[in-house]
Image 1 (cartoon, rainbow, N blue to C red):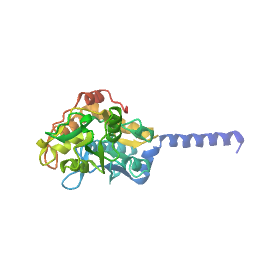
Image 2 (spheres, one colour):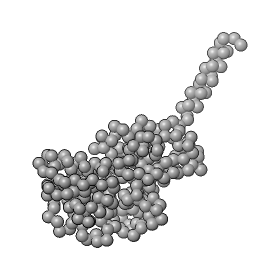
Image 3 (cartoon, rainbow, N blue to C red):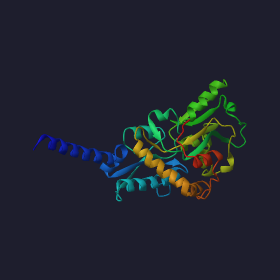
Length: 297
């Protein structure tokens, strides 16, 4: 075989290999394809985003969004029989489990912060909340400054901890912080008298109040530490998977499917107690839906 022909054959094979590599999914999609399954991280008590129903099945707004993303992944990989594995997570473990590859996406409420963006990526915004506090209805607490010297429950790993600390330092007061592993435990500390307030995202507070034995006993203060965007957490440095996730969510927003799912979980009775959170879309969320973005705070 003469030299020019050899070179032509080598170039042809190299071109075919390069083309195949370019068309082959990498990162998370390759991991999912090779494993034959996609792994979803879910929360147990984050109503209405990700929680367990009476049958201990994970349900919620974020779970529904992730179900649509799973469908998109099946289509992208041409694997209609792709399996879904569910992995329980806590607020404090969600990022480590994404980083070490145990899960592929967090199907739950997660604040998109610039600090977290250093280690993980976020989908386009799916919700916007405000960090506030729930207290007893007749408690003389209207602002965070009124919590000076009082015991306050906080969920380990939440952004509320740093925000409350910054507010306290700026305005020269201190709180007696009680850290718990999850939101249910934080709310329990309040309802059993171990704390005078629970600081967390307003929608999560609203859901805990709605599901409590005596919702009328509790009040969310108007004062806010910060407005926060939520996104679904995925691995950093994986533009291909992020593009698929964002494309799926944006298409839902433009087709009104996203808005319908929101109504299902936030303005109608939901399982297991058929409680209605009565939490319509806020102006910041409507803006995020009209102008999809993944900006952090």
